[in-house]
Image (tube, rainbow over all chains, first blue to last red):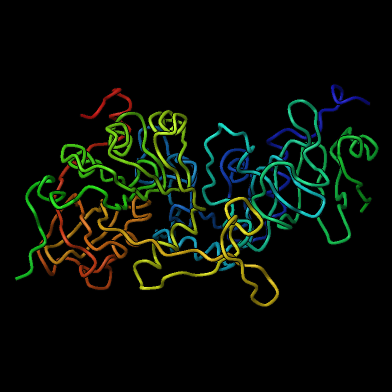
Length: 217
Length: 236
């Protein structure tokens, strides 16, 4: 098999897979970009409360055209709605929820993830780039469970799951589970365990595209 | 009699001096006190250190203040956004300093500033480049980094409703940094979309108690930064 023939999961399927793994009643923070898709796939019989760090618990779907409110936005600065029972609060309270361990699950994107769950997702470390961190470092330290949603390899086909991150870290030993287009992988003290393979992906192919040893579940 | 209401935005910002540290509320456009910032552009105070989550969009608001060369240093968590053009250019030329702070650490440093706590320990940023050079201490076997409080000479904050005592209510996610910035400045200057009589705000729902506020100016229909951006406007 070569990667041209491998389709794996689409972005939407990855989002759906994560959505199905979020327990009823969870408080969840979604990172900017790909993680935002997850909100579209929560099973109807579950009540999940979405937190956005700019001060809203109970983020609802995007507003209908003409109903956008510049003062009702998410962390990605996109207009959103507030569900019934939502609440607003200031930034110190919002980060008390994050840093105080009150949010159950946070789902973020990644540049690199190490074998031991180190995460790099805020800077490529290029000398001329303007660094920007937002709430990523707070989220990985404070939230109980960190899921990563990412393509398995970079655009050039380089593994994103590596021995040691070469990009600047967001946090050390913080990732619990990785959802890629090829597989779902648990990060444990005994190493990386493959929980599920995408259709058309076998263990050998997955291992070839991962820079560290994987274990079968 | 206590009356914190001032008539104009220029009265509101009149006391801001060169070299001041100023906190400016807002998360992107939401909560950004555009009229007060534009009054500060007109006022002309220079060598300012500005604490704000972002660095402004296009050529209006905070971006206009930076473009007018009034800001020597930004303390923020996310200096580049899709529509931020002024700060990236000055930063690339080395004409503006940046202190990058994780968003929650920034919020907590501001809160600490307002509550008389000089410094605190947090696990956020441990083992990352943002902890380099900072004191690390172990508590219960885990490493934590020491972060200092931030206090400001002035805060510029936008809210929805105020009274002459300075009690404030905010609007949706435009609240963001407002309440903690009000606490952390020696002089907090607020623009409110509506000023009501004392007693009209239910004491149970006051968000910022008036003791944290110095001046309030009423701006009935605040400009939408998004509209200014769509119209490709510049300030001044």
